[in-house]
Image 1 (spheres, rainbow, N blue to C red):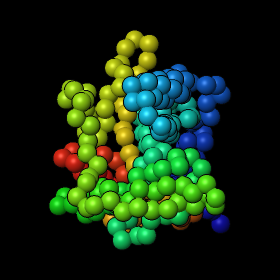
Image 2: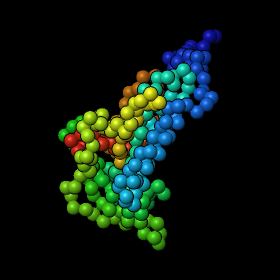
Image 3: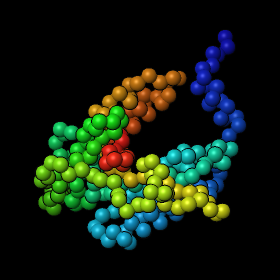
Image 4: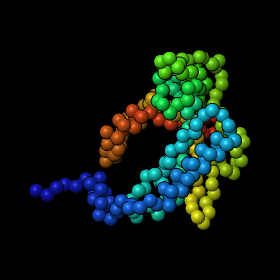
Length: 229
C-alpha cells in the first residue's frame, strides 16, 4: 500500500532533496554577530549606566541556515532588551525571583490594553530590588501614570516601524535593523488566542507551541507610546 503524502511531507522532502546545511560560517552570521557587539558597545559608551543590553539575532539571518535559501537574506534584524526592564501581565503579582541575566534592580512594567488591537501600553508599576540574603526580589510600587516612552532623539529617517536603522547597507554587507523590546517571562492574556488559533497543515506542532509559550514573549515598542506583544 503506497504511503499518502501530506503537504508538509512534500515540503520536507523537497528541502531535503534540494538543500543542505550550510557547512561554513556565513557572511550574514558574522555580520550579525559583529552588529550585536557594536550595538552593545555603542549603548554602553553613551549611556554609562549600570545596566546591560542583551541582543538577539532574529529574522532571516537567524532562520535561514540552509543553502540555497541563504541568498534570500536581505538584512539583519537584532532585537535587544535591557536587564533592568521587565514586563508583567496586568494584575499579576510582582515576581520574587528572576533569571540570572537580570540586574539586582529591575523596573517592572504592567502590560495594559490600548485602544489599538494588538497594541498595549507599558505602565511602570514596581521597582524590584534583589535582597542579598536570599536572592529574592522585593517590590516597591510606583505611582500610576508613568509609561515607557519611545526614544525621542532618533532621527525620523532612521525609524522603520518598530525598528531603528543602526547600519546602512553598503558594498561589504547588509543593513542592520535594531528593535528594542521588554522581556516578559510569562505569556500575557493579550496573546492568549495565539496557541489555539487555527493553523493550516498543523504547523508549528504542539511541542513547538508549548515551548514558545513556556518561554514567555518580548514586548516590542511601537508608535504613539504603544507596544506590541
